[in-house]
Length: 437
Image (cartoon, rainbow, N blue to C red; front, side, top):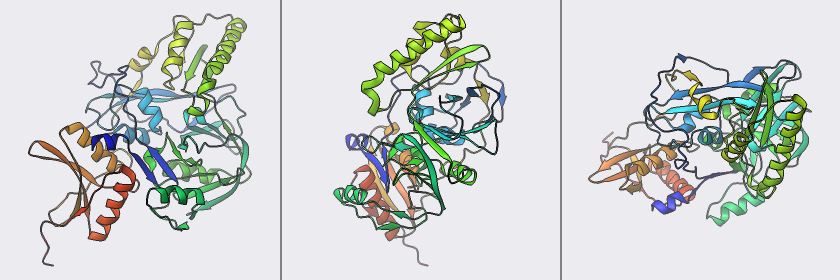
């Protein structure tokens, strides 16, 4: 059973959400309570930044300590980050089951892509969108995105927004019909607006045929290659962008894994792992970067720490790091990050209702390992729409129970979702106590 789960995929409509990787092998940032006491602040800018002339880097590196039942995905969404941003920056923390008190680095500093500051710029390499409003010169808005998975790549190039639609219906393409049919699932020709619509509440059609920038009913796929090519934003982010963006606005989609910036008399490098489509070009892209840095070094008459450059490229964690000789390394950046106080409630963090004997439920799986049981329960809680679940200890095992469900019909529908998305064969369980009312 465990092997099946670890190889499973989470799917919904137009999305294909790969299993979240376990990055706990790399212990660059330890999952532990911090030894150093950091002064705390309440808020930090996450989306909207003012730009001065020539400024090419915005934001601030921050950190927050986890509480019981937090996940990295919950923290990421609250602070305007994608799953890729937070998981890669914190490789020593298990994303779905972090220990309470773990110090989580929030990579909220961004180097702007090397592209004209007009309209929308989407950098596939770090799965981040930058919006330069014409009506608000000197500002930039930035949002994490989900993009097309391998084989369904998001197209590159210059296009425009050609139409906008609130509460869109989804006309299911034939290719997606076939994909679901191969898994024993059938989709309607049109999915109406609502919680089961993978387009979410807002959609903007691009000049590239059949491609959209839209919301999602599965927000925890943001920051991953999850879609059939469309660009997805958190529901709260697409609502803001939808209201600001105009039909006819340019949209430029690029792939720039290596970004540089001068900021406060210091040269910074941000490295991201090239997407799989560009894996064979990684060596060439690195050579081009090194050539660019040598030119900057000569022109500015500055010394670059080339060993640090190699380490940054090898790590490719998306964190801007200064690269001049004797400049701080990523450990120092982490240690000096702005410490944020934990919010009273993380935005849209799932809350699971109590399971009573009179409720319908589903026994999803049973584990000897408590962590694996908690991981599966948490993943169910972060489906779109949510599948309420919890871990329950029974004798020497840990069961994952989904529910409550109000009736047999709802329980059967969720059981089908679990079979489709996790490849686990489950059946609903009747209420243990039948109400007399």
